[in-house]
Image (cartoon, rainbow, N blue to C red; front, top):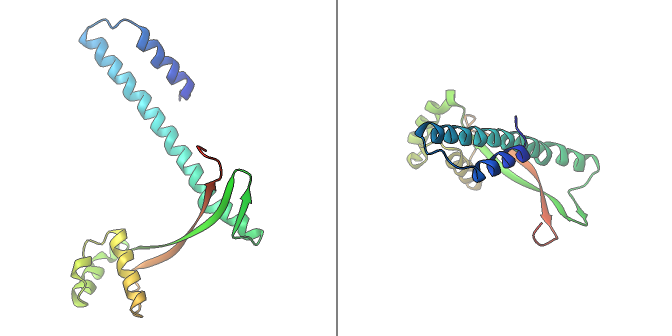
Length: 151
């Protein structure tokens, strides 16, 4: 997989070369650009997974091990954000739809994650039990607020 520097050098070279004007060479340039974009997307995806592992697993675990809920550093303030998440497993969506019809929640029938979360929150606020076909959990995410402008 080419590095970002190699991709930039290739792009620079193409920008300064004279296009031959033939359809085949232009389509080949198009293909090369697509390959470069695919490589960058793969790098971005891998980097996002590493970033998510740090902010959702490693840093919260380290804070918990230290008995902390946050920390201040010269480059920013670290805190934990807690968000409730909800979902309905695919194999239980028919059961969810039947329950929605039977309990006056026809407006919730899309069964999207945000809709399910809204339903779960509504039930909790009303003091009603959340049906067991709705899986809920709290996601803990480390958030770094930068103290430097432009960082």
